[in-house]
Image (cartoon, rainbow, N blue to C red; front, top):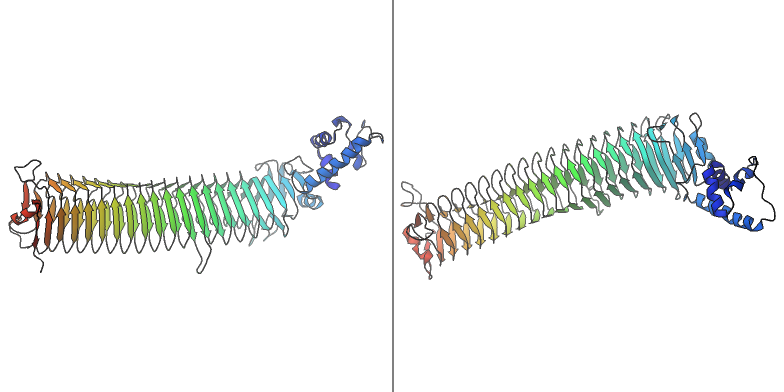
Length: 601
């Protein structure tokens, strides 16, 4: 019954609400004051004859008590108003479940403990301040082993000092809303959420705390919406154990650790947020040694920029989706994918990072779709170890080094993508790496369109390799290539260069208008040419590096050439090469029956 007394004594608006519910005229309702024995002047007491209204009133009393007890009227008007100089904790202790306690303007030097359902409402974060006084204690602790519903709004929490002193600590099983709350300048974490707590943090700021901004651990669940977490000494948000966390329209800026650090957390969603200028990584995802936690992270519509470390550092076996994001201007790489993570990058922009756009290493797997990777200081994409990638509809351009560099035993499938205007090669494959490339373009790179070395392998189909400053395709050492239905044209030196013990098969392709040779072979290279058009090259259509093709060289070609049905016009033909082929023994390449030149030892 005390809940009703407090409710009806709180304000005229409360009494009007109850009057409408009961059916009385608001001007006749003095129930709240009659219950306290202080009926206001002019109020007529209820008569026995109004039995119907009394019965209705009893039902209303019960309804209001239930609503208050469940916290459903938590957004309603004030039950208590605490003035500056009065004790907030005393009001909390006196209040019954569901009460709304309002704080006037002012500063209170108290450490508060809430263990029941209620609302604590200030006059505004710039007007109402709670400042901790007890060393080692949180300024505001909300704790209950059973489920309670607590709302804290429109106030500032500050001044926690001593070890393990948090601004706000939530533990047990409370369901909390922190609305328009400023948590500032506390000795440890700003907000510490643990156990099975559920919390919504909305329209708030968590700044200048000497620990982490927000720490969420164990089985807690948190949603951080339209909130700024900035300038904290540790991570902006630290998420551990089996926590589940969602960030929506949040700003995570200038924190002394990671913007968001995820360790063994089950589910994390970051939507429409900004993570920038943090001292370490923008977002880091890791797993403890031996952890079996299945971590799922979704980052959508978010900008990660200007963090000193990586934009996203992803380790362990997490499954991560990055869509419609900008990852820019980081001190290291835009994205690091390591160990056994599985990552989808879609519709995003990876640009201007101080090292690479994307690193994929270990046994990580990446799918990169409709994404631009451009203007990074080193490679656009670096793949190493046994990493795997599927790249579809990507634009990899303007990177200071290679568009993509593959090494060790990395594997990639590239479809409908463009590698252009990079400072070195479009794609460089080394080690035993392998790539399959279809319907893609390699244009205007400062060296080769595709360069293979060591024992790397590539399969190219339906693609264009054009306008590169050196060669369209270069094969060195023991590399392997299969090229079909591809245009290799307008490159600054040769269309195709083969040296060492490399092997290549080129079928149904066009090799034309390259500055010097269409194809250049040396050492022990092995080439199969079938039904290609090799035209309008500035020197020879096909050339072996030996005399008489190159006077005064001591080299002798010791490889193997076979093929048939090719179009390789000489100087008098249409779309002529300066010379069809050299030496003349390669004339079988244009015949239908074909032939071979075998000098292998």
